[in-house]
Length: 316
Image 1 (cartoon, rainbow, N blue to C red):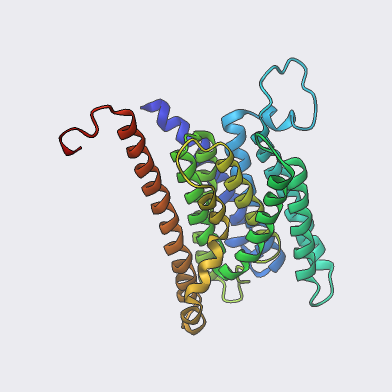
Image 2: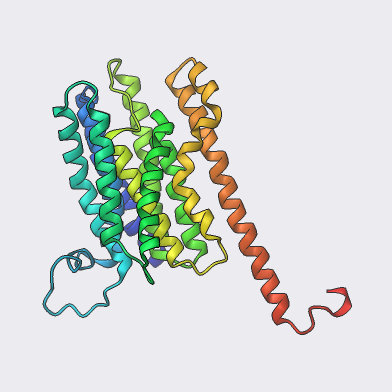
């Protein structure tokens, strides 16, 4: 039991706390009044949670061997390990995106975000591959990154609340599919997103001129890429009966914040608006998870009956 607790602390709790500590630099300090800080640090924290979980699970060599040859390293090269390198690159990318957006004239920041998202999708398609890659699958991965980037702005200020649920769904589906490593890594990002959302709410209460959380710039790019990569990875290695389309639907969950758009726009406070946006995404997320569990249970039951020569006896 102690081993299990220690493992969970190492690959979920500690990475989430490290990420929250980084995000807190901007969320509960005077930097909360700086838009660049509110954009940069939480975005970096999301990628950092995955990276720390990844390295605690597999070691830094799993990241390093993606770009250099390590003497004496005889561990197997696994395609999905590129996700660790992607998380590291997204941390660097978050800083670059924020810096570029700050230098743009008024109205130019969204252009930087769109360009960054396009570059991220292209790089993901080029360098992140899973078993049996094809041109169509790689183009599909790029399209999924872009689709997630279109869906995320609809989350508005609820981006980290919704990321909490979205990464949690990927973690649950990965666990269902027998991919424990991906499950704990996405679980770490999910917990980190929750902590970031809570810190943002606390910081906003104590600073009247606090900059709002927005689903734009670095947070949008980081969350879109991480969600798309994690969902595609889980689908590629899935050993359950979960259909491909359910996996691919998860990165689009933030877009369902629009279900209660009218209520969010009429909400008397930021907290109320955040609640309505989160509720729409949460309902769809729960439906996806419920459908995956039901489909897997149904197909598993059907398979058991087919293998049982006595299944038709006594009206069975």
